[in-house]
Image (cartoon, rainbow, N blue to C red; front, side):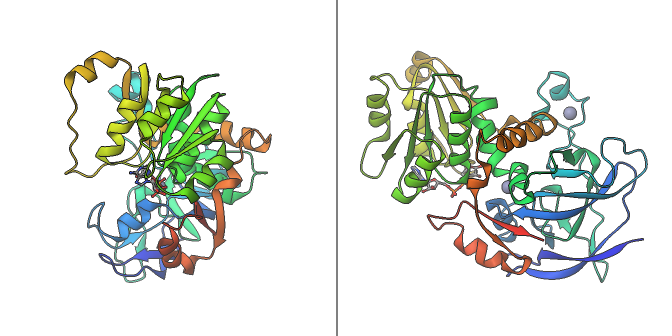
Length: 361
Ligand code: APR
Ligand code: ZN
Ligand code: ZN
């Protein structure tokens, strides 16, 4: 039986979001209905509202979520009703070239649920990143559900569904930060701070946080930064080199997404160091570099997509480490809010002290 629940809709470009009744169909083959317990507010939700992702309004927002599987469709064996799960926006196919190369995080054929949720008048909803979890329940593909330790707080678990995983994964998966490494993180918002926490988890000896906002640098210290650089008052490349014996960092993680910070990341790496690009640029951005510097400095330049994560490997592992007190994912939850508070959360997103506002149900 289809059911009616409350969910947060972005009705049209830049229009305020609103809580509406939405219709959730029964799960079809390979699908699951999940009762959402918590869902974080991410910049991407705001970008959907602004029409910056696509114009398939109305959107059902929310994609950083944890909850309990309520029902599964035909053929679903990976999860069952009652399982506590974190949702992911990339259910990989296991068969495409990327999957077969052992890089499923680049899967060309992800299997998210088909868009079947609607408003009461039958209008089809586009779920944000194929999830749509600012809702009491949502419909996903079973491959979008990863079972984790049910003892963890849902507001903490849900964070792994997007930004926090992107940052931690940039350090541990893409950057392959190792014990004793020096790491610089440029841009200390939620993603950069998660990269800092990931670098600490991986055993980095030096973690240099770079931002233009001193309040962000204070938070970065709490996440594990050992040194901070305000790039409004100091040249960040010189400062990073000075802090690394004149060499540059073994791994530099860029979490802003602008040409000048890409360039800083490029020059702040040690010879043969690794640059990890997590910040997403806009289509018109360009970067010009002397080829001799590209050639001569060696090393590698990598972009990191969803932290190059494998949900089934990384979500349970990070939750276990959190439960053991070896990483504090709870530090990313600034406030818990209700379904009706998303507009205010969007407005507060750029405040110095908000890492994540999380809707709890
Ligand atoms: N140099 C250093 N830091 C900067 C600069 C700059 N020129 N410009 C902005 N910043 C800092 C901001 O002060 C802020 O702390 O970058 C941080 C960006 O943080 P958020 O806006 O909170 O963004 P976040 O959610 O962390 O995402 C960062 O990663 O996944 C991508 O799409 C995401 O491109 C975005 C980036
Ligand atoms: Zn694939
Ligand atoms: Zn997100």
